[in-house]
Length: 149
Image 1 (tube, rainbow, N blue to C red):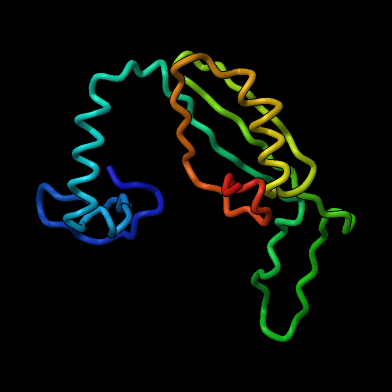
Image 2: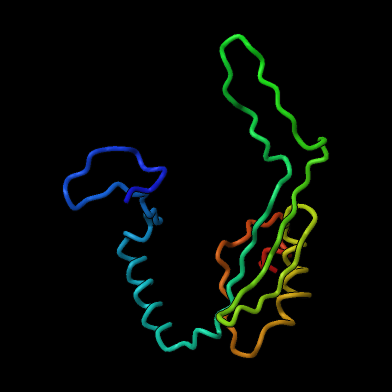
């Protein structure tokens, strides 16, 4: 069975054309491989219920495509939301039992907003012994918000 976005190419028997799973090339370095193996050994005995994963996601109302297709020599028209474009950001944590600590921001997440989330939403939801894992470290614009104070 081919994925709908797969190029239609003939494959040798027993093979199929599928989208690649791309991983960071740093994982191929020997020092990183050793550290990952050490982490896996140390994590093997940890209760998975202690992990709290933290992530951020956003939506913009200005995601109207700026380009389209039309016959040469003609102008392409489209419509978009009234020019009052906004960004909405959601930060949340999730654990094995599904509980989470969500916060929605009107705008992008900066260091001050992230720190407010940690202090006012995340920390009160934590239990003794929890391990917080940030899926993507924030590149904050605030030294205080980046945890470097």
